[in-house]
Image (cartoon, rainbow, N blue to C red; front, side):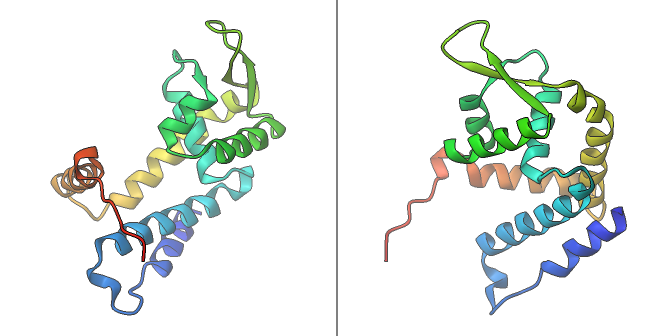
Amino acid sequence: MKRKVIAIMGECCMDIHGLNRAVSFWIKQADLCIDRGVQHALAAHDLSSTQLKVLVLLYTHPEQAFRQKDLEQQLQLTNPTVTGILSNMERKGLIRRVKNPRDSRSKVVELTERSHQLKDELMAFAADFEEKLTEHLSAPEREQLIALLKKLLEPEHSVTVNSI
């Protein structure tokens, strides 16, 4: 299965109409290719890549009580999008929304027994996918790529685009 994911990623990353000099094009292509690869690999578990991100966030921060608003901020997604993701995950028995122990006016997202049973497999998948994704980069190149992408995302470098 892992080789198939990488093959799918390779197929979708191509130059379109001379856009090979546009950084934004390549960032979007990389995102789409990664997402397609992950979606394909997670199909057996009926999980989306975003649902995996939610689970990984919850797995890696077990001490933190995440409200929906916290997930929206962490994943940089809109309220309606996160509402739909959490509703689907609830239907699949992966999470439940319970009263926030610190503020009864809000709810927090909790992992279920089913999601705890999947933890080792999903965390191993996420680590393996990351490893396969960057295996052709040296350690310094990987760190440089992360640093450059973070630099593009710094608030003081945000891009304002004028309407056409």
